[in-house]
Length: 384
Image (cartoon, rainbow, N blue to C red):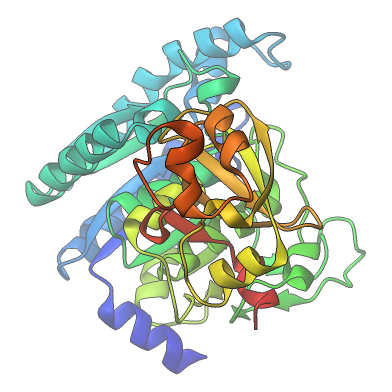
């Protein structure tokens, strides 16, 4: 395992560091010592030629601390107001910490809608690239002041997995308040939890080890961190879940020490576009496929034709992301559809030669072209 870690860090140039609320907060407010240590380590490692991007929690906690609020916030507007107060305070701490090392930071606040729209997604990537070229440290957070359920990432682990793809990171380091992944919750297993230093593949068994229980100031828990690791490893990016409160943790990682849990990247991984389709876009409907179409899509990498469609669910338009399911209801792929739900319902089960006869036009042979389709991990496993 030490050799695998050494090879990974040797090839790494771009690093995304995600810092959770459980790491950043102390006594209800932001722990400035943690941020100072983080800035010092990143400044030192940057001298080796590494480029860093940070996804940081802590805005709401910072706002609560300034307001003197100790209990939980009671409503979404209260949380958004606390974030509005705390975001500037959090950035001030980061700016001072990095400024001591002659480094400049930049704030990027995002919502899911910024990444779902392809043009805004590309604009985000271009801005990020420009900042890194200027050797600026981007500090990214969800724009909690305006986010509602429809445009929320859910947690910063999800945001980090998406940003790792956008910046084409070579490594995601997820700093948390545990040593890494255990086979059960170490806080409630009376010393029986076994630490897992290496994960070669994120199987159902690995996922079963995780819990959604989060730090009182966090949202994700270990489950969301492993889900983030699953997403980035599917894109070919290794991930390390490591103890964020330990001083020198980043240096340990880049010295090749066996710190935290290393998740190895999948050998066959998605392109950036297919990753965007699979993990960023939210499905607007479902298409149920027959067994022949499932085999063609999963085993042979073929496009989906109308002849393989059994049933259409939901209301979607041309170009919308749609989930493809087998007859047992298992999602086997997601893709950008070439026909609206109403038109697809009319041509389902038909050969492509019949499309124009039914609709009066035939813009495409395929319901979803293979270039616009991402096949799921579970489907690939079932397909052999």
